[in-house]
Image 1 (cartoon, rainbow, N blue to C red):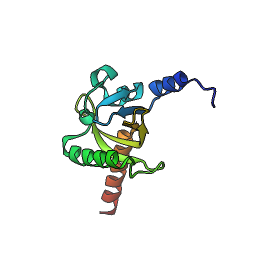
Image 2 (cartoon, rainbow, N blue to C red):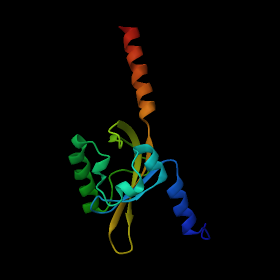
Image 3 (cartoon, rainbow, N blue to C red):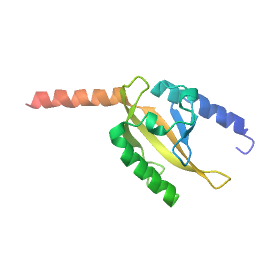
Image 4 (cartoon, rainbow, N blue to C red):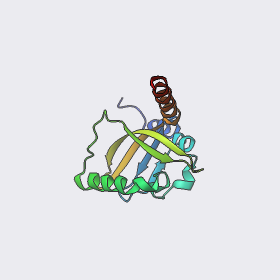
Amino acid sequence: MEDLNPEVVLGMAAQAPDGIVIIDGDGLIRFWNRGSERIFGFSADEVDGRSLDVIIPERHRKRHWDGFQEAMDRGTTRYGDADLLNVPALAADGRKLSIEFSVVLLPAPDGSTYVGAVIRDVTARRERERELMRRRAEATA
């Protein structure tokens, strides 16, 4: 894979159907791919340089930023490669979303650290699961 052109990799990241978001050490959005545009409804231009708060529901922000700061201070995340996080998120139109994501710390050559996430919208699946649980509860009542 040594001969794989970095531009091809970047092109894949830009066009991937899953959301790929990269934020800097200040929590500002620095990369937002086509999948993120589809999931959240914000264009890359709309979010470039903005705080990730644009997609984090207000009641979850403190917990998010506490964990973010802890990871930045330690230089590691408490989540492993196989961990998939499930959290609520916000779309541009105010809809509440359910997302799953994995997260990695990305050290830069200048010593700074970025955080990358691969995101999937699981809102429809979560709604189906809740409906199934509701039906089961009704059937046993």
